[in-house]
Image: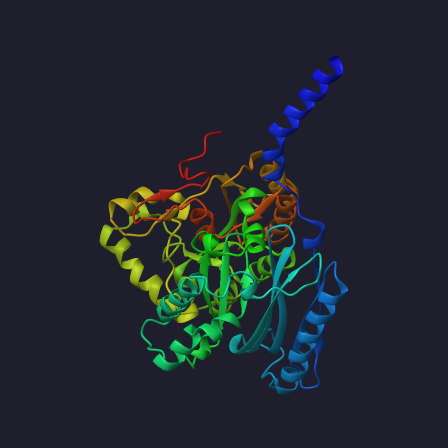
Length: 448
């Protein structure tokens, strides 16, 4: 009888613990990727940085390597000779960004970015999604049945989101309709993320003078009911993982933002960058890379000043200036703001009209804290739905970001963009409203 009671107790404990454990699975072995690169200086002084991926499957590695090498072979000979020997160079960055969803699926976006004296002059890309246990390639037709209404949803989102880019320019109606056609949707380049399916298009497809990417983001919640069974399983990330958002303020900067972006790519994590408006023009290449590498971008006001010392009309006037610079850089305005020093009450009083994203975990990296101290702070404070505050202009932050991402993934977290974090709970960001976190729809300040 004692043994039966013990067995029953263990069974009850197992049943009680299982939802918790299944909600916080560590990084799966099949999702582990090592990215490395080589730099090649060509005879004319131009540079090629070629990234390579080492996954658990040789077949995946071989296909990705073949694809990236083909881009290098095609583009490297066309690089112009740089006009000087400084960092204003002529280069090809053959990059690989990856993301995971579910227990075995993983997406890769291979980007061949050509720049001359930091100006982006060309970009080619392709995507692949695989089941990392079998090596099988996953297509959009593996997500939705032939008669699924999801195709109509995707077509509508493609039309709406692509026409939202570069609002002062009008895309060719025939080209736009072609991208929305069913046969082209079925073969569209796509990647899968923590809570979103993203369709990728070159801006030049509709806006010929631009070389950035355009992303059509559709949250899983808008598609889930129409997915095939395996796709539902592989996108049901809230059943397997906790979530949080990693955010960066005060940038861009030349060196440290570059290193943060590099380390986010290495760890396969997406973040949200809150960009100071009056820095965009000088660092337009950095803002473009943030966007093209799949990160979300928010405003951090026009300048990093104390808003309590500005008039209401001056605060409202920031919107047009920030929007103008952001549209020039990536084709669209930011949808939300983080106020310097978190002083949002003055912005709400002035009716500026942005949603305001605060934070629930401050790493205090802005104080110059060491990586070990920053990581220790994250370990002590992290909880589901948190928004983590960092600053991509600080010297220790690139390494801190890498260590934070590695730790959180092993602790069962998926790092989401701000857009994904709120969408997962159906929270629609409202003007002149403040948000600290998002867990089960709760966006209030976190109680310590």
